[in-house]
Every structure is written in structure tokens, then in C-alpha cells.
Amino acid sequence: QKEVEQNSGPLSVPEGAIASLNCTYSDRGSQSFFWYRQYSGKSPELIMSIYSNGDKEDGRFTAQLNKASQYVSLLIRDSQPSDSATYLCAVNIYQAGTALIFGKGTTLSVSS
Amino acid sequence: GAVVSQHPSRVICKSGTSVKIECRSLDFQATTMFWYRQFPKKSLMLMATSNEGSKATYEQGVEKDKFLINHASLTLSTLTVTSAHPEDSSFYICSAERADEQYFGPGTRLTVT
Image 1 (cartoon, chains in turn blue, purple):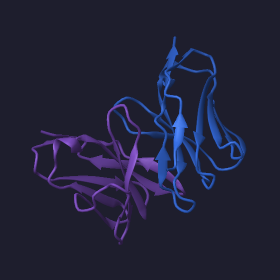
Image 2: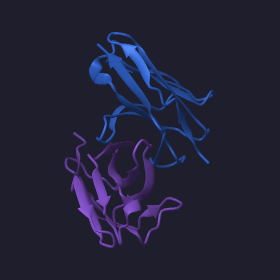
Image 3: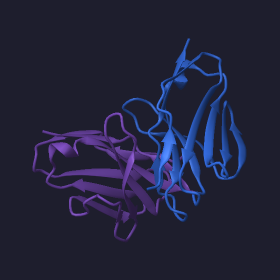
């Protein structure tokens, strides 16, 4: 059974702090990794994709991938109250194709 | 770019009836679309992969005769929930693939009474 694990939280950080979200996955064959943000009652919104080991930065967001440890993380710098949401880690299910398996999500709460 | 729409956004139907949900990619063509289901406080679960011009591929445990998928064009996939029951009440979300990434529609909240 292929799995994606996330700490459900809630993760609480003050405004302006760095929020660190973590995810592990079970399938060593996975090649594509994604972070989505989901507000309550809404559908997921793609934040970042990462395919290679190392860091990838986009604005306030940095994704980190370590395939040897089967670990992917998302750092949010200068956290804002509007970042409060559930963050879903997703990994491609099959070695070919883009079907995704999602973690249960980590709820982030940023207090002003 | 990469806008995906769904219709309807909410639907309430009686037990035993069928409901059709449409998923459209508005500004790009999508050979592949996906259908997910999300129960309250749970994560998204992939139901099926929809490929334009061919039969959908269903995930284990998803009844293909109950959840009918049609992907008749490069911008439209439909999911029909047949003979709906209260346990089918859920948030149904489609996504369309572009450049190896998935872009999600806004979702359809189905309530079966």
C-alpha cells in the first residue's frame, strides 16, 4: 500500500515566522512531488512542484526533497494569517503518469 | 492560465437518482483528467483517471458501473453518479493535467437525501 504521511497538526506559528511542513512517502519509485494548499470548503491549489533532490524556491515558499530519505518538506517564510490553511503533500502514484496520492494534510494556523 | 471549472458547485438529490458533474479545462486542452472524492476531515482519494477518447481507469474499490466517466473532448470530462445513496454524499473534485502538473476544479458538493 503506497502511502504519504503528514503530521495533521495543527501547526501554529506567529505572523512573520517560518512555518515548516513535512511529508514522507513510501514508494521509492515516485518521481514527482507537489504541495497544495486547501482552504476549508475549497479545492486544492498548487503551490509548488519538485522533481529533483535539493531545494526549490518560489517567493516565500521553499520545497525541499530528499529521495534517499523519502522526505519532502515545505518552508513558508514570513508567514501571514492568509497562509492559514491545510497543506497537502502529494506524490505521483505510478512511476509513469501523473495520478497522485495525497497525504491527509497539515493544518497551519498563523496568528497575527 | 490553467483554469478548471466544475458544474454544478452544489447539488442535492434524492436517493436512487443520478447526478452528472461536468469538469472543463477553460484555457488549455487536457488529454488526461482525474476525479477525486474527499470526505469531511479526510484527504483526497483518487477515484479514476479519465483519458480523452478511451475508457477511464478506475482505482481499486471504485465501482465503474456506479461512477460513469466520459471524456468526450479535450476540454470536458463528466462524472455521473448513478443510483446515488446517502453514503455517496461527498466533495467531488476533478483535476486536469497540463505539463505533468494537475490543476483542480473548484469541486462539487453532493448531498444525497
